[in-house]
Image (cartoon, rainbow, N blue to C red; front, side, top):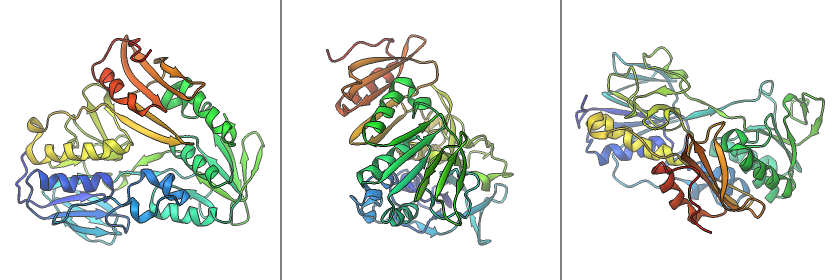
Length: 401
């Protein structure tokens, strides 16, 4: 299917992927009505990476974290409206107030929803961290807090721990896995992250699960499964996210931990009229197979590619085949990863020293270099990305003696 340039298009989701999709539509020659629907009330939307770091600590004013948009996009923006249904036959998206939005082309960019900790609903002092409003509420409570308990030692948990320690707060981090981030980056990198946390005064309870969060209307204590009790003023929950696809159930689109797409990011079941991008999209990557990724770089790049496939068709767009990339800033150290790491990969220190906190880890699978982690050496990223892109033999050459 090739989209009529004057046909109405609806973008559901007004964060990074949705904004970049709107920009791409105009760039690709779409001249028709373009509607962007967002559940949040902010436009332009906020960039999310600074929220758990500079915005949380107050180093960056929230207004300066807004995405920059060009003038003259000609977009109708509908904010504070959550999509609740999709009728593909009629070509309509339904809003939570009963309104409907007609389309010939649809971009699904609804992102993901943070997972809540069971048993904490309605308990004050328990925070999820996804939006700028979430950060504002957390900042307000941190101003009078002395102790923070963080449940989940993923990227959000580790970054919030770093931010809270910079504010002088007493921080305890709980996670069922040991080492932190080991499931994503492997044992060597996870061991480094664990040491960083300890060296910066974070108390760790790893290999531990939460049995309950207790308090009379407000969280005051985190109780672990082994009976350990952690007194706290604030609880931050960072135990992952779920793709926001509830509104698509029964629509005819294929859903499986995200909107299932072909290699060009066209949603299966959408008859070529629906594409997906960002955290919500699961697509057929030519190299890595079925893939869904929750990182900033992918949201913007995938939105542009998905729109190209929507406007011009998959033959013109081709497969979406980036080398995944993400980064995290923790305790003044930048961690940058390219590629895909999986359990069982071989890992070697290819450059530098883990003990000194400046190194590159190379990841290998079946004799091929499949990933690289650069820690404290951002200038090395370009050359290591080239090795991963080229499927260099593993173990790779040491590029710097």
